[in-house]
Length: 160
Image 1 (cartoon, helix red, strand yellow):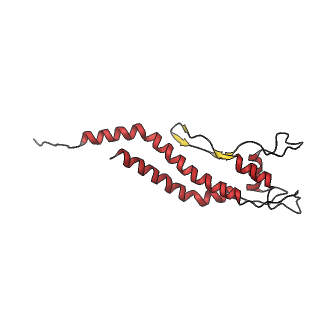
Image 2 (cartoon, rainbow, N blue to C red):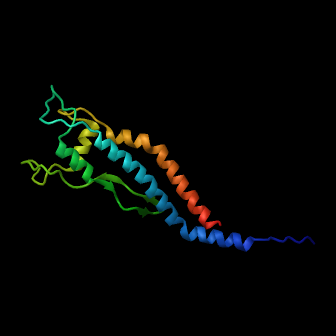
Image 3 (tube, rainbow, N blue to C red):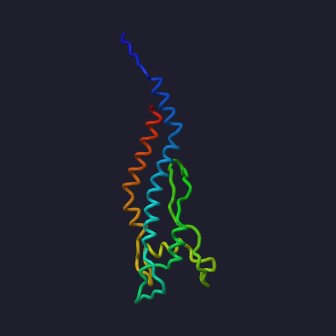
């Protein structure tokens, strides 16, 4: 009868157990690092929006936003806390709050998300300036690389 002898199987089993117990934290860290890359790219894009004062018309569309609106967008942008939604670990980048200029239609101020959407898609009085779409596309590969590096570093710590 043949005899099979496995050496190191206990060590391997312990490493797998450590991996299982820490896998969610590893993925959360990687998602956070990747999201930070995209968020930084979006913030840079927001800073590049042209400043233009005045009101637009369908015949003479705006090519930018006011200084206050630009500052409101930059200050209102951020990442949501990372969450685990049935095994899908995610975060969202977006805008929160209201602009600092109050109007009759918007007594709290223009919602930052509404202003950002009008820039991305354009309106009857504003030319389209898709800074978010461009920033996400530009930073996607770099974010994936950072996430991969983060996971690999964490796995190396576990498998030492």
